Image 1 (cartoon, helix red, strand yellow):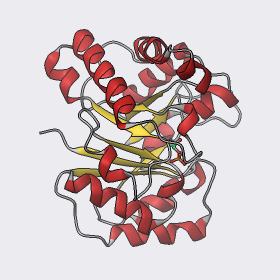
Image 2 (cartoon, helix red, strand yellow; image 1 turned 90 degrees about the vertical axis):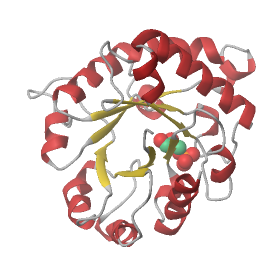
Image 3 (tube, rainbow, N blue to C red; image 1 turned 90 degrees about the horizontal axis):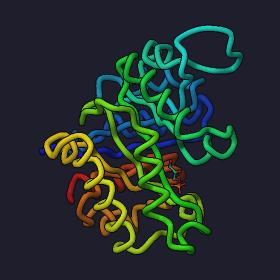
Image 4 (tube, helix red, strand yellow; image 1 turned 45 degrees about the horizontal axis):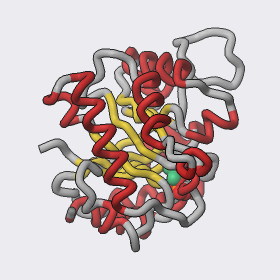
Length: 249
Ligand SMILES: O=C(CO)COP(=O)(O)O
């Protein structure tokens, strides 16, 4: 059985003092079938790597450039993330798509760069509130999935995160039926494109206001293989409760 994944996206939060939260997580009992990933800001990557110690916790980036080196002031390549100890990178988060005008094509190029550096790409998708309300959720998600993910994905190199934009940081969560509908749809699309074996094994994360209180029911939805957690990943006790709920699901 494919392992589940609890991924924490710290976004633009965290100073050296925040590493105490990572150290706290690193002392927990090993999970049975759940991988744990923390994606701190780039400034903390190598120190977070030190703080996870020899625990099972992995470290990831929040974005990478599509090129390996060059004149791109302020950007970070996938190779640099790997060099700093990352094993994965979040790509195409809605905040990147919005703040930096990232298109599906950009995300696709970045995913190729991540793979070339040996990183697992966590490709994010999700509809806006207007798109949810006008009934175009599956069209939008289907197009993002088709265009943001390059050919030749495998279960080791690709994770897909469904994050409805209107659920991020708002405390609003789709109904379990709505989450299930999108996850079933993404699963079917991945199976059609990459074959049943690969498509069934690619992990599908839900993200958007996941908290210790709602995690158990969300993890009970078929085709939800984990979570991409923002705010609740900043506090070790909250993130640990989400990890525990996933490991028990
Ligand atoms: O954007 C998210 C994770 O990438 C979700 O953020 P919140 O968990 O804070 O809603």
